[in-house]
Image 1 (cartoon, rainbow, N blue to C red):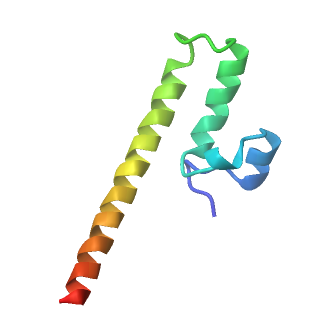
Image 2 (image 1 turned 30 degrees about the horizontal axis):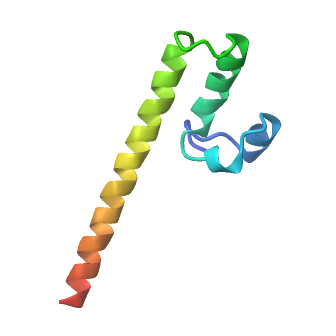
Length: 80
């Protein structure tokens, strides 16, 4: 199942995205990479796409850290 921020495995395979980059924000990486290639990787181009991708990455990181924190609390409560 794919969400609005997750591309399908077929799309990622066609775009030749490495396995390490196939995460929750993969759908935002596809247009970013297209823009980067079209604009010859100029750092001042594709700012909107890059910002959206980095924001998604950060929000995914925060979500995973909250989940980890909840798991640690649950593990400590089980020990007691």
